[in-house]
Length: 265
Image (cartoon, rainbow, N blue to C red):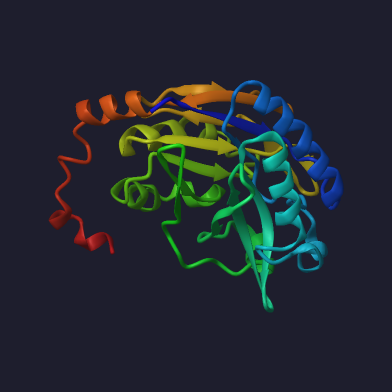
């Protein structure tokens, strides 16, 4: 199988302005497609902005709502899959969610953030209860998480045991926690033998200062693509052949002794 060229859109767009954010996404999808990318990954809450406060319930929408339809049109127009973050409404409940739409405009998977970070998220969102959400794309098994979720090693290990090849993590990583992007994410990729696409917001937004540093980390623990602190689009390859070779040479998962770990749960 050929590598899956993966584009990371590091941008905060325009918080509170869905139409403007869709324009940013459309332009980025065009640039990503020109590089040969088959997948474009956006940050956490990209559709609406993250620090939108009282507008969370107003801007939240169903998984098949108008935002999803607009993203599907962008995916089809540019011929690539798109993963984007958004506030999801399900009845009276609102989740911090991410959705994957393929190049044919089909909704492949929807994930609800399971570990909510800080007072802001805990006030406005309900945590999801499905740990492992996956979809198949271009011969790879893709998994989904959101930001804080990846900082729990049990979460990523569950994906490794479920066969995730490329873990997509839209994030809103803020100062002073940039070490997560710089160090934790590459280590998670190495210890679980997978690719991780970690895609951040950037710059000031409300009370937050997002640090950028988006990366595509490989199973060798290196950043195959890395953004700086400003808005940008970076591209890297998730190579199934390299992944298979790395898994064959790395004994972590084979050498596990689950019987010793029962106290963890």
